[in-house]
Image (cartoon, rainbow, N blue to C red; front, side, top):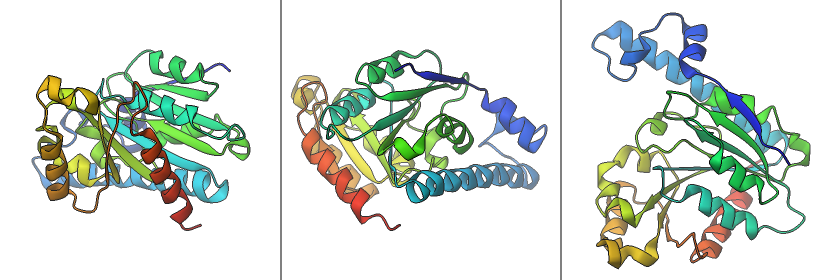
Length: 251
């Protein structure tokens, strides 16, 4: 299969939708009018994400999971291991977001996954509109599962849901055991936490128990999984949890 590619600038999209908003100040308003404009923008993207959810999950019964985290945390490797464990009859698609390039998309394509690669240019996250455009590239009637890999970033995606059933936040021990408490908003915006590269925690001086404690304090109900995506450690437990969430989701 060959990866589709969508190259779009969110600056152009938001300008088209909302006029000459001061996009370089997005998220840093200093007056009431700017705050209202930004709230309107966020609300528009949330409506688009809800529409994606209805179309993918409810209309076509496709399980949809989003992966978030820093560049290098292991998001693509986790998806690869999940794909390898999928039943042979399961048809899987993936939307891969990156600022530039198609390296991650090609990795998933090599596993027989139909991939739409989305390059965001200067933007640091996917949004509901970009995902809606990518979803339109698939034959949803033939899909069983859709993975969405967000752009590597631990800040911007917090305010931009994409319509998935579950948002899985991946951090790695190589980022330091303070990575959780440095990014509380993103953890609170997600459903599942994965501490990847758990096998080298001692070597990089990371305390996984501390990371777990920080998750418990910031997002008390969030399940935490320890994985080694390179060798597949912990992936079976994560896969089982995602399947349970899929079956528990109301239709």
